[in-house]
Image (tube, rainbow, N blue to C red; front, side, top):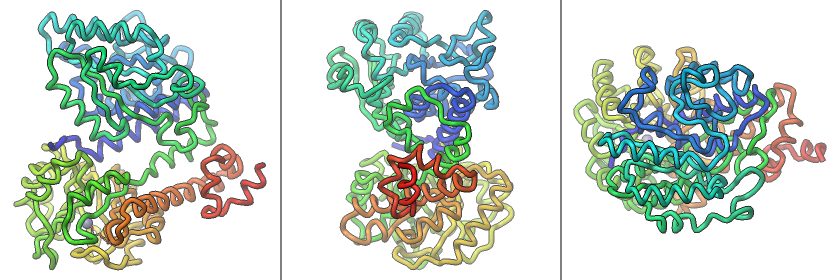
Length: 546
Ligand code: DX5
Ligand code: ZN
């Protein structure tokens, strides 16, 4: 089922929310990065994609409600609201300041509280365990008035120690509140330790099911899974629903991830430029299923997803635009049934304007056409169709094709640009080294024109070339032969992810060195750098720190 989520734009907005939140917390010198980051995709999906709401009319009668009961995630919450258009993102720098509207824990907006809050905040949080009860009041009232508003409530797993949560759980199922969706940010950590040590919550699924709730479990950082769960829940009647979102506290910054120390602590302000670089450096791995043994696409998709691939790259070849023929929309339609992993369709076909509808119907999440296969007018038409269908539009450029200046005008509507590093038509070709300069040159043009989308590298990407294209600006890595060229797909993907990690850490280290804080940075990140010491050449640095 196509999720119509404009995947890459949504992904970028969630990343931007993390970047804003960490700037606010560092500026304030206090705040909660852990929760702001573990709930980033949850809050992002709700405000950027799912909920009916109007930043220009925050009290719109038909709006859906978001009750943030896990109130210490405030910096992340404010960041999402600012990207959604409720406040100027500059205001994040006033977080926790006296007289700021962005208090440490959100304050429900009212005329009386206008100096400590802003329109759009529905609930005053702080002491936890209460938000679900407030949500029940709203849900019950709306249901009794025959209104269609939906109520989404974010709760925490530490917060679930509160008895009131379970009173509310009973009441919600008693009143059959199928307009109420709770989302549990299951990051397994609370204030000063791990939930299962402090107050075991598992088997959490069984608990909620026993309270007669509809229970769904997802990876809380996979936006496609959250969106899929939210749309399935809408069909559930006479029962409230809960999404158990398995998340990582501090996700996004490696030394904060899964680390209770970063529950309520701010990073030093001088680290912010490096932290922002880290957040913009996330690498997505997209295995190309035409590589390796012929066909057997279902198995290839399943194994790649299991091994942690972020996207599936689908090379559509018509035997005309390129000499070979691969598969078409009907095959994709079939594959769409077996997985919600985002599909990255690369159309190497003539006249894509005549065929793009098929790939929209087939359930692709990203559709990229070649600049050599369409003129500006056709591209604009294709782009319109994709955006209308909630699909991320992309454009691909072959090694021999100069960057077409007419693209500049359309950059806001392009979510990904594939800079080919082989001539299209086959997997398993040798990487063309000259494409690195081409990529770096293109990135320069794009940056100077405020391009916000992604750069995708496609062709000959493997453990030896990944760092080079990363340094040239690519953040989505297509890998055909490197993943399916040998039987152990799982370790092939793990090795690529490892190389991606080394590439990112090398870049952050360079930045720390340039900013004269190399040892301080290594010290703050010591635990996760030790395993990479030899590859990063920092054995001596680590030794000196001891
Ligand atoms: C080539 C395709 C690529 C190719 C990648 O025309 O667009 O996606 O399948 O395979 P490798 O990584 O093996 O070059
Ligand atoms: Zn491709």
